[in-house]
Length: 501
Image (cartoon, rainbow, N blue to C red; front, top):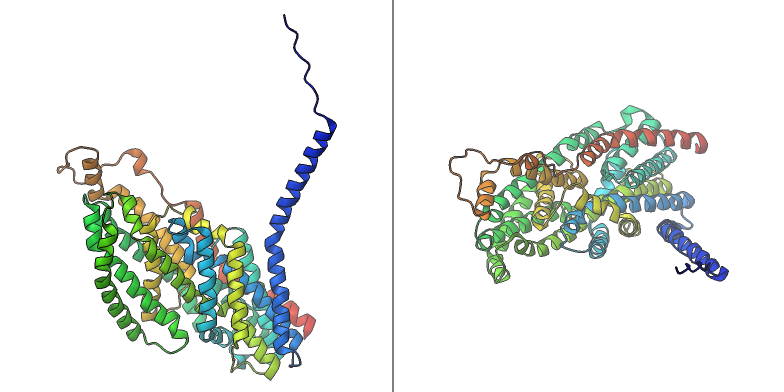
């Protein structure tokens, strides 16, 4: 019987080298985790230097520099939390990669902020907390400081927990809470606050309904047709034409509307004309794209990819034009109060818009992927057709809200549309007669003309296509966003007033 060879112990040098390798890997992981906070801190420092170059020698220069740093922090948080809704559906549907989506959104966010961001910034600066309600410029400055800090901190916490919230609601709540601390409840424009509160229910519900409606049309007219490609040639040009028209009207209200006044009637006319022209032009284009495609759903997805990329770009441009105000509006009020002693005629210079636009883009790149994955893949499964419904719903909901004069949140619309798509799929899977007959024929069975309702097995009947945990946590976060921001801002403002006034 052969004796077993004794196992040779590893040389001491090899053990020591393995330890060094482990330490190096741990150090690499740690440095990688510190890269994003380091880049964010560096950006805030650079913004302070950048702002100092514009205000050196001006009254209140130190306060303006500090406010610019807070605005930069707020802008990065907006990018990390809010911009993800613009590209989440397209990335989740694999119409574009995460890196491409982040880069695309970053470029168009800066463009929208710098080109068309001035109008809404003025509204945030003076519309919620009227300057005449504040006793002195110093009180206005510290109230807006408190609003910026509270809103940015709340968004930061929400992003850390992976919850998309409305950045507009956070800054509105921050300004409201700081105003109450400064001058009491009478200082707040409660009509504006009431309209924003109504949008909690209106915007996500309407977004969900519109997205579900278009998904129903796509399923009935294309997906569950036996000749999908022929149906796609007929219907896809019309569907994409509707999207093109909707985004033309959307941009005329949200983008161009920040440069010149665009009546809702004009925006509606633009929507109809551009949509009809796009539909006619797309008929031969879609016919060429459909040539040689196999008769399956995977082929249909190719026809919606380019429109999704374009919609992500346009949503980002409009978001930059509209939501840069959440960071720049309070900064503009602070600069005006510090330099001239009044904040009723706020001027927003380009250097402030640049801070907001670049900050939003940097926040998206550094911290956005977490919520992009949540919106695009974790709430419900998306493909290009479903993502198309989400993007189209966002544009159409803004147009409808403009008709009734109600402010809306793009975050609430986009996330509401994702929920709408998911819940509709659950309902349709259980109740659609067309889907039931289509699946029977595909399985080689004869159509069941006697069955009044589709028969689904027990597994399909109880199948859930939307994660309820995400649904409940996001709804709860939406409900507490404004009051939580207001309470935090009131607390911070009270401390600031005690320390500096």
